[in-house]
Length: 66
Image 1 (tube, helix red, strand yellow):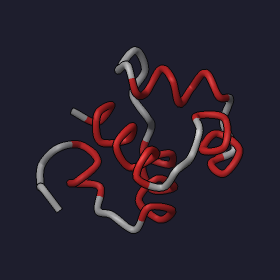
Image 2: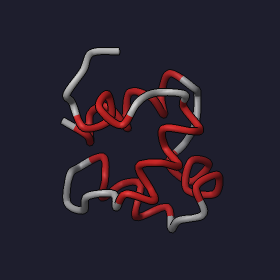
Image 3: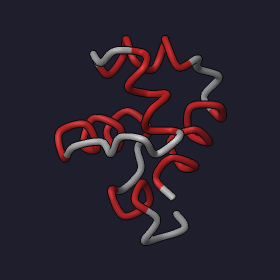
């Protein structure tokens, strides 16, 4: 679920994987791996995603719809 949410948020904000990676200070492959759920973001990365996209951690991990 988190992969779909990250990808949807990225696309809604018209960002490429590379752009999001630069914003979050991770390798662009990391964003790809999150979106395909090959890797899970750690808590620090989840917090950065939440802060950037202004959403809750519950939303990122699929526990809420908003």
